[in-house]
Every structure is written in C-alpha cells, then in structure tokens.
Image 1 (cartoon, rainbow, N blue to C red):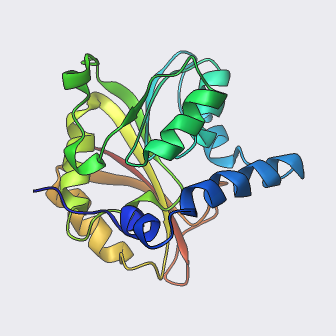
Image 2 (cartoon, rainbow, N blue to C red):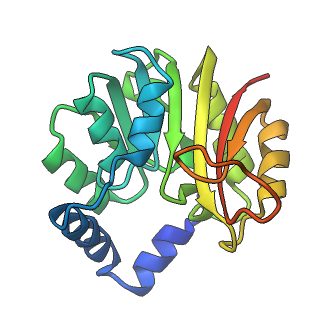
Length: 201
C-alpha cells in the first residue's frame, strides 16, 4: 500500500495549500524575482536538446524553463493540482501525476532514459517517510549510463544530509559534487542547503 507523502499530508490538513503555493510563485514572478537559478545550472550541464526529468516538478517552474531553453523535458509530481498548473503554463511538456516512490515512466510509454534528472524545491523532504531510498533507486533506473541527478534541499527539514548521502550510495549512486547553493557556493559543515550531483555507480 502506498504511503502518504508529507506534501499530501500537508494538503490534507490545508486543502488550499497547493493553490497558495502556485500563487506564491506567480506573485514572485510578477515582482521580477529570479526563479530560474536551478534551471540555469542544469542548462549549463547539458548540450541543447538533452532529455531531462523534472522529478517533483510542482507547477513546472524548473522543467518549463528548461523546455523553453530547448530541452526535451518530462515532469512528474504527486499533486494533481500542481500538474494541472504546469499543463496550463507549459502545454507542450508531458506532465504526469505520479508518486516518485512509484516512478515508472516506461509504463506511460516513455522508455528512453534521461541525461539528467533534477529534483529542486525541497522535494526530497516532502516524500513519504522512509521512501527516499526507493525514490533514489527509481531515479537511477530512469537515468542514462552517463547521466546525472541534481538534488537540492535544505537542512532542518527532517532529512539529514548524511542520511541522504547514505541513501544515494545504497541506491547505486555516487556523489560527484556537492554545493551549498544553486550558484555553486562551496558546501561545508555549516551549510544549511545542499545541491548534490549524483551519477550511476
């Protein structure tokens, strides 16, 4: 039986949470906030036209920008309201409502592996408790042999960085780089945010 994600639990407690989340980024965009930092980093790591999976895509902020930059993007999120918003704003991108712990895009007719999988926006901290190893393993299964996974999340959200590194290793992934910001500031013991670049072992 599938476990409820922490995002779903938050939404169950507050049915308006998804609408608030979507509106929050719309307001930030209207105010001229820079919302493309994650996409800029991913774009710099790949040739034009690369295959990218936006894992935990939300309303398509990162995946939509990467598609606009000429990449072949697929987005997945557990929240149907966020996926509906992504489809509205970026109708040419295939978006799927799916729990990352059950990620199976070949079942949806998408069998070609990805050059890069990006998971931004603290997605790893909103998973169902105990499913992070499964999520990382599922990501690995969807990754091209020389592909990379880029994960970003903050400290103090219930998922220790050290545990994440252990889970990634157990899932058959190796840590290639770690930074404290999406603009590649160095990571150290005082860092309160992690951007990890993983590859297949």
